[in-house]
Each structure stands twice: as C-alpha cells, then as structure tokens.
Length: 427
Image (cartoon, rainbow, N blue to C red):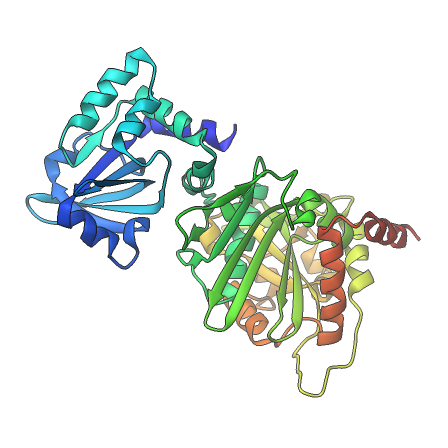
C-alpha cells in the first residue's frame, strides 16, 4: 500500500478536521515560536465531540483580505479546564491551493461538493469532515506536487514501528540511534529532508524545520546521482557548529558489500562504527525466565568474512585515542520487544569468541544470547552511544577516511567497486 492509500484509509477512520483562525488570533499564531508548524490551542469541549486524534487537519488562516492554508496533524486533545479542550497541531506546512474557495473548488464530485462548501462556509473554528469526504480531500491534495512531501511525512508519522518485528523497525531504531549519538531526540527537527518517491524510509517520520518536505522522483534528481543506486532518504541536522547527515538506503548494496545495517561516521572525532542487527527468538523458559535464542543462518559466516576484510588495524595519529578500534558491532534485539527497550550490543570480535563456548550453545545450532549467559559482558545503547560520540571506539582516522570513500562509492552505484569487493569475497 502506498503512503497516499495508507493516509486515505486512515482518514476514513480518523476523519480530516478543518481548523479556522482569523484576525489577531491568526497573526499571533503565525508569529509564535514554531508558527503553524507546531502549536497548541484551546476551544470549547463541544467542538471536539466528533474529533478522533491523531487526525489529518487543514488549517485556514485569515487576516483582513489575506488567506493562508496549511495541512498538518491534529496529534492530541485533552481537557484543560472545565470548559475547554486543549489540542495540538504538529507537522504543519503550507499547501496549495492557498485560499478557501480554491480548496472548495478541488472537490468537484456532486455528492461531496455542496456539503464541503457548506461546512467551510461555517464560521465554526473546528469542523470535522465525513470519512468519505476526508479520503477524497486527501487524494486531491496529494495529487498536487508541492503537497506531496509534507503529506507523506504526516502519513509516515502515523505508522511508527513500536516493536522489533521487521526491517522497518530495525531501520527506525538505527535512525534513532544515529540521532541519539549526535545528542538529538526523535522530536528534534531536521534542517533539510529529502525523500525518494516510492521508496520506504524511516526518515519519512523525521520532523523538519522548513514548511515542507521535498519528495524527489528517485529516477531523476539533479546533483544526486547516488540516489539512483539505492538511497531512499536524506536528512540533515544541525547542532551548534556540528552537522549530522543521515542517509537511508536499500540494504542490498551496503549489506552485501559490508554486511551491516547502520554506518556511523563521526567526522569530528574521525572514527567510524558499523552495526548489524540480529533478531533473538523466544524458546521456552529456563528457571522461570524466557530463553532467548539467536539462530545463525547460512549467511552468517559470509557476513563475518565480509566484515573482517575491512577490520584492519592501524596506528593512531598523534592526538587521537581509542579504547578499542573495533569497527563492527552486533546488536541483538528480542523479536516483538518494544523499541524503547533497546538491546544488547557486543563487538564482532567478542561474538566470534563466545559463539564457540559451551554455555552459549542452544538447541538446533542456536546461540543463547541473554543477560545471564553474557554475565554483564555487553553494552547497552547509552554507554555505546557515549563512547561512539566521544571517539573512544571505532576505527582510527586513516581507516575511517578510507572506509568513508568506499561507502560513498557504494552508495553512488560504482559497480566496479562493488564488483571488486564481491571478487574479494570469493577469492
């Protein structure tokens, strides 16, 4: 199901809400800290009787003879006084058309045109639409190119993975790990966000500072030849004098060449760390505790071999220091566990040692990866992030630079480089 179909389907269950502001109320909203991008307001309880949240919303602002139209997500509502409900709008962005009359003109179907016009002619500040009309309006607005990026961001935000049960959840966790390493939360805003048309990416759920998200046709993006090979999204974050650039990509090339899911390059500390996710499956109980098993597949040894090709040692530069210059780490997560619970992280070298020890042997060639079997010899996400951020772990500067160039070539679709790596793997 495309994001448009998903948003249309969702709007039938949580119909679109039209919010109207005028006069000084609108100008004060425009001048607020985040403007229409994110704001709260309070109105009478009765206005929200038929409103289900979260719900897509259209914000109509009017001051004197000027109108502005925005789309956003009515993300929450709650009683704040005896008489009023507080509601929050997030992910707001300016849309086309830009006037109420032009918005009404979008709905040409006779069954819906008059009811839509009548509803918007009302002066009510909160106007819920019908389910079918909501789906039709979403369809009309999504067909306008300037609206697509922002509306996709709204659609993606409504389907955030909550549990480790597939690749989408793993990518979501990888993106959040990258943000946390940079000292950002999931609520922080990117200064730039580009999404590739028809490509799934966890970056679609990232909030952005600008009024809209840019959605490109992945087949033709001027200045971004690398997108043709498999990049599905790009986000740029700024914090002080530092910048974090996050790319998501089709897993095939990067994973096939390097055997990893997440690559973090810290240009400030000149270190690089690569992470691969492994899923733990429940297997009964031992002494009243769930027995968690990792079952290596036939590709594990090949993946490790690909990692080892690049796990070379080097001497540090005069001013750099590492507790450990290991590049590759494995993150074990429990299937269907909450993303908030994180997982267990261990270096590849540690994993290679423990996989042959008898206390880790499980049924059907599985490995018992648990708190008990590891006996405290593992990293949680927080200390892993701390050491990565300060440069205490990861490759030394010269290896980091070499790997960065290699990764850029892979993302850029350099088939000669990819073929050369594949030949190395079969040599």
